[in-house]
Amino acid sequence: MNGASEEGDRLAGAPHPRAAKCLIGHAEAEAAVLSAWSKGRLPHAFLIGGPQGIGKATLAYRIARFVLASPHAGERKSIAPASLEIAPDHPVSRQVAALSHPDLLVLRRVKAEDDKKLPSEISVGEVRRTVPFFGSTAALGGWRVCIVDSADELNRNGANALLKVLEEPPARSLILIVSHAPGRLIATIRSRCRRLTLRPLSPADVARALRAMTDEISDLPLSQIEEAAAACGGRVRHALELLTGEGLEVRNLTADLLARLPTVDGDALHSLGDRIQREQGLAVFAETVEDWLAAAATGQAPAARLARLAETWEKVRRAAVEADIYNLDRKPLVFQVFAMLAEATRQPSAGRA
Image (cartoon, rainbow, N blue to C red; front, side):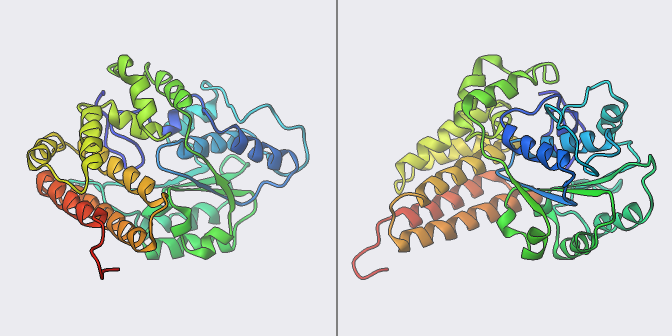
């Protein structure tokens, strides 16, 4: 893929969700927003939940453009338009794409000038930017919109600071909260938002979304789109990871090793470790393992085995995050993960739970 500046809310080399020209596969969620708008019942906050990489941020920016381009949206009953679409050449679309609209605030992970790596959390300082933003009138006389992408990256202090805004929302304000795991957010945040739950896309919709990106990603391997769309679990972001470098090869090798568990092939693990030294390879490896664990946990397994799988799932996630944050050697991680998986999948001996 083409190189791109590092941002905490985008996949490197891929177009940013704020620049997306269309939303594919989430007509029901869009219709719910349009219905609330047409009835004059636009809530002060939407919690947009679902797996990572299925279009939640794209929907959030789409809603933001619509509201910012419609100064009286949600204030009175009116005829609902056919979609939330705002033309790409509309001034609001250009301002949102450039993050220059005075009535839009985006809270995300930001790298300071002297930092070498993106932080792992959205700082409380970022969230406190909402105080002057919502404390003043809208610069253009319409609505003020804040996007949080994603709430899963808020630390405890940041979450509490966001809660204060949700508890006393100013008039004509809209907060769009993106979350990959809404159930993990504090209950008081969830209770103050209207939920929009997005589902993974069909392989056909993923393929459509990928083809729509070919203008922005000139080196997207067209011949592998169908394979990536079928293997990504309905997540466009994961499909893009699979299409990067040796992504599909990493995924297929990992899946093959997972299918052999509890047997472990040391030579194959060495080969896999060599292939995931780059960040994208690590992401593909972690996604494939987590998908396998999720599928295993939904089967008709005994309670004791389910508990072991759930514990292993959390350990795998934590190990992958640490390897990314601290730039650790990937090969020991591969051996560590498969050792945990082998232990979790072995049948318990007599007398064991």
